[in-house]
Amino acid sequence: MKKILIITERRADFSRFKPIIKLIQKDKKLDYQLIVTGLHLVKKYGYTINEINKDKFKIFSKFKMFDSEYFIKNDGAEMVRAIGKVFINISHLLKKSKPDLILSGFDIAANFAISVAGAHMNIPVAHIQGGEVSGTIDESIRHATSKFSNFHFTANKETKNRLIKLGEIPKNIFSVGCPSIDALLSEDLINKELIKKKFKINLDENFLLVIQHPVTSEQDTLSQINKTLSVIKNSKMQHLVVFPNNDSGSKKILQEIKKTNLNYVPTLTLSEYRTLLSGKMILIGNSSSGIHEAASFKVPVINIGSRQSGRFKPKNVVNVNYSKQEIEKAIKKVKSQNFYKKIKNIKNPYGDGKSAIKIIKIIKKLNLRNFDTQKKLTY
Image 1 (cartoon, rainbow, N blue to C red):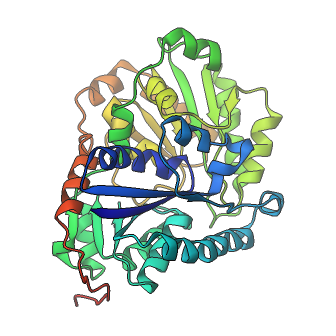
Image 2: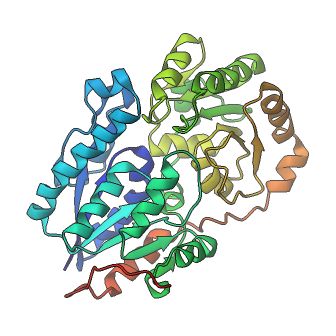
Image 3: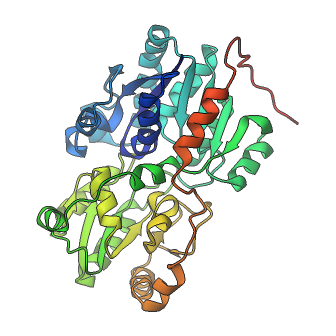
């Protein structure tokens, strides 16, 4: 039996791991150990460990990554301290766990830390969704994680080719798609009336869902979010603003959201998000969900700024700068019948909802006995 270790820091990585863990649970040849940290343990971000417990996933261990000081200062130095805590804790947990494989993912700090630790402790590491290009500190974390990993599950052939250019071994790179699509497609829809009662959203009428994260390499976070919030307020449309992640600069965004009379929530469960995607939703902001997942649900996306600038974007995505005029113009455009006709038959380049199945099949075939974890460039 192969023992697979997974760490999850926030809703963004857990949504992708969830369908994979579910398949592991059903397989007699696989077992998993789940470590929970980060925003999952922070109450003002929804204390999402409750969702993990609700789904009856067994938790191997948990530890705090963010303390009160982190949220007070909310700067780059605190991000470094937080990832330092992961390094310290994970070294002990890996010794206790003795996994056959670490399944790491994406561009999230805790996943980077566990990949580095695995490399130092000669434990094979498989990384999900390497080779993608994005903005902010995520860009560096993602590529660095790939360099500490032995196997790669990429979203498409473009990202596979990018990893080959980075010197990774082609036979160890598998193009499987994005597992977050699997997770959303497997969720049950919530009754429309319950959504209306909880979020004040009528799914049968156009509404705006706003998810805008800070860009750590840019200094004008305040101006950026205020332009977006101003447009939402002036639109007079139904809307729901979701809190950003906790990267440096998020404190300013949270303060501005709370100053308004706008409709906002700290977080969404997967089933809630899936149900909102089934309605007449327009996604606004800079979340990777607009790039990876929205196309599967034929949802228009207004992508603001530089955070996702390097990623290949489906035809449902309209790019704009931090400009009220551009955002307003884009809303008008994506609400039109012509735009909906344009994206009616769109195919998602990031997967077909079967990524988790492909990942599990490959993991089962990997020969990990006496595996040489030493990395070498191929050029």
